[in-house]
Structures are given as structure tokens and as C-alpha cells.
Length: 425
Ligand SMILES: Cc1ncc(COP(=O)(O)O)c(C=O)c1O
Image (cartoon, rainbow, N blue to C red; front, top):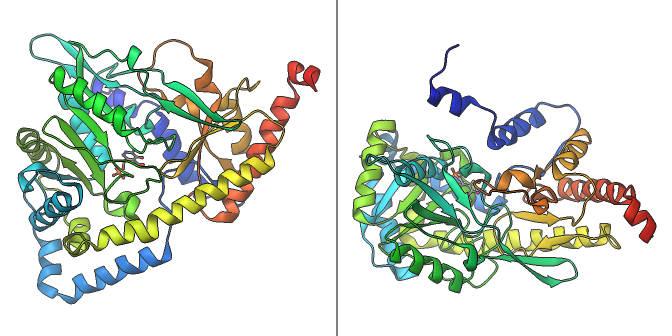
């Protein structure tokens, strides 16, 4: 098969492909597998029940259902959903926005394909621009969406040790350079993979930098405020005309209906609608129709704050407790879990790479993701990238418990095999 440059780029091996294939093959194995690798949201029975009720309501209104599945929406997305969301964001976040500031996409992943390639890559004047990730590690799903090479440039974080086993990354502003080759700045908040929540002060400084250089700051709020609100730290939701906030229905528990949301100034929203028309004609209406009433009434906020956030918070605390118990006496750090659905574990001076650890765990039926995949755009060698893994704690408790036990066993074996540790012991 002779492939174009596009064809070759988008069929090459990628971290996200490995992740999705691991998930797929895990499902077809006979032995039990602890799936601590993917980003699937948890199944929270009370939340699932609410979505089933909402579907029954939609089905009960024959006309609304027929229009939902029988009509194309406009390329900006489902109008009632957009209007309800604009109202919610005005009320809840105090943002000065209207329906002209919101576009729907077929999942945030496709939002990022559009946004990154819109602001970075080759320009008509012969120049090239990149997306600046001011705090690596960042979301693995960004890494391969570029239509051109080297779409990203990233900055190493500051590492603040909070106690013997907890740390937090911070933006190292001394190393963040915004210049003529910067097309946009992007952060996920909360961050996948680390569970970090950038402080308000960090976001304000990034907003100032972005507007001073007339480039957008993209804030990926897939786990953020006001929904699904998987945020355990204090955090203000920010938006202004220089900021693009992306949201998603996935982590509410609806990844199957592929609904992403972009909130931006009117010019950007018109551009997104234009690209939606070319790529998709229209965006899916099913997700928006399912949640429009919940958004209009504000129920989505109650679901997020009363059911979703506490669920993940207690799962995170439990997972950290298990980890501390299993790894007593060994050197390990957990990134302070401030949000999202992952633990980011750092094993300083681990004698094997995190990719080797990934393979050893995979052999035992435990799937995690090696840290090195989460540093798109970071140049130079940094051992830290190979000392970390991402562990999802959203799956059933038994799997997470067994997975953490296996991780601890493999890590202990690796440390015990190290001559320096043997000497120290
Ligand atoms: C930080 C972040 N952004 C975006 C996405 C993409 O979400 P979706 O395409 O399901 O809306 C994910 C998915 O896990 C994510 O973790």
C-alpha cells in the first residue's frame, strides 16, 4: 500500500494506539486483567441511572427523539445545548459569553486535532509555529495529532516535594519562552496524566503571557469545572477572549457518545464550525440532546459535585493508602492527586526503565502506561521521564488493589536488584 505523507503519519505507531490496542486485547483475554492503563471513566451506578432516565425521557417525547436522530445539526452543534451551556457558564463561572462563543465537536480529541493544526504547523508566509506545553508531562493524546512534524515544544516542570512520598509539579516560568514561533499555549487542568491542578496564579501568569504575545491559551478542562468537576483542589475556572477552554461529556460518564465542546471568541468558533462542516458536515446530536435539560436546570452540577467528584476523591485516597502500605521502606513519590482519574507515580533512580516496568506488569496482566509517552515536545534526555508511570484508579476496587500490589512487587524486585540499594541495605 502506497501511503501519502498524511497516511504514513497517521498510521505510524503512536503511544495512543498502543494504549487503545492494549485495552482492546485485554478485553479479549481469558485471564483477568487489571486495566489501570486507559482513561475510561468509572461506572458510577447513580450517575448511570440518571442518564438512563434522561434517555427514557427523550424517547418518551417522540418528536424530540425523531429530530435528534433524524436531522443534521448546523456545523456549530446542537443549538439548544449550546444555549443552555452558555447560560450555565454565565451563571456558574461568571463568564461573559453567549452561544456565539461555543462550538460542539465529536469529542475533545477531535477538538485538539482542529485547534492544534489551526494554530501550529506551516503558515502561508513560510513561517512555522508550535504549540507550547509549559508544563510537561502532558496528555498522551496530544502527541500524534499534528499534520506536520514537531508540532510541540514543552518545558520541564519544577518539582516541589511536599512530604516524604508526595510531590507536585509547578510551571517553571524561568524556562517558559513565548516567541514568534509560538502558535498557542496549552495546558490540561486537571492534568492527565498527573492529577495536577495548575494554581490560579499559574493560570493567570499564562493568560498574561498569551495575551502579551497575542496567542491563545488553551485550557483543556476535560476533568474540570463546572463539570465533571473532578477537581479536589481550590481552582477558579478562567476564560476570556484570548483563552480557549475545551470541555467534554466523556468524564461525566459518556465517552461513548463522543461530545466535545470548545469555548472561544467568535472568530475561532466560526473557524471551528467551518472545519466541522468540511470534516463531519455536522456534529453528533445525541450527547447534547441527552444532557441539555440537565445543563439548563443545573442538575449536571449537582451530579458532578455530589456524585462524581466525591467518588473519585475517595478512590484516589484509597489507592494512595494501598500504595503507601505496599511500598513501605522503598523510595517512591505520588504526585499530589488534585483531580482527574489517575495517580502519577515516580520511582527515583529506579534501576529499570518505566517501559520495562510496563512490560513486566503487562506479562502479569496489569496494564499501566509508562511515563515517557507523556512528554511530547520535550527535548533532551531526562531520566525522570523513565522513572514514572500513570495508573488509573477509576476501575473496580479489586482490580486497582491487585494492580497496585503487582506494581509494588515489581518495583521492589527492581530496587532490590540494584547493587547500590543492596549495599545500602
Ligand atoms: C486531558 C484530556 N483531554 C482530552 C481528552 C479526550 O476526551 P474525549 O475525546 O473523550 O472528549 C482526554 C481523554 O481521556 C483527556 O484526558
